[in-house]
Length: 247
Image 1 (cartoon, one colour):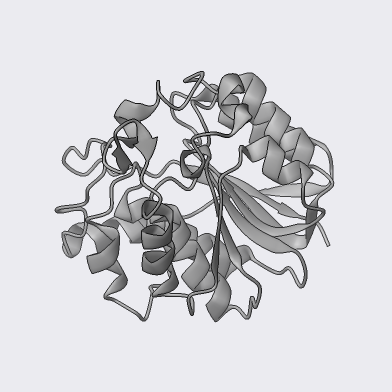
Image 2 (tube, one colour; image 1 turned 90 degrees about the vertical axis):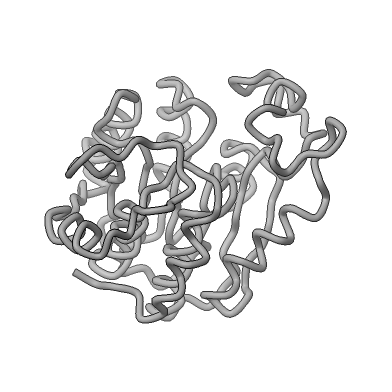
């Protein structure tokens, strides 16, 4: 198990709103440390929201020698993007409840993306780029990814499979594609990962969660984590999985 040397990352991570457990964040860090072998392409977090998952991924990537910008991508960063019409919410105004902590007067607070960029940048040399795009827009606009994390919209099976197929030929050899809400109630995510594995272009990668859960429990790291996931007893969320592109 790999642990961030910058332990103050937990102090910045836990107050941030979002649906990522500390357990999952350490898991993301370990996915990069254990499986990432890419030498080219860009890194992106699709559906990055407040940046909880971005923080640990960016830190691990830069420690592994990644030198480009880390891309935080979310429709919440652009209330006027026409792609809202194709989202679960239908428009930004309908998503206002979810975005309320950043929105002012029905319009997105223009300072909030920059504030999150700075927080994530504390742990990766401030090389963070904000994009107010949908996942499919962003994938279509770029040719090659070395790392991508997908946590978009409501994980509708059709959307997740569309994301997987759009990425199928765009992940560089040794690059990894991770999905949130893997092996929980969002069955479309599991099917998308299985699809990529079935192409012969990818291997499905799994995390050994036991030592991570043990470490989180012993250090009470989920305490005060501002996540709307429910932590009950020894049951910590471990809903991250994905694939690595074959060399």
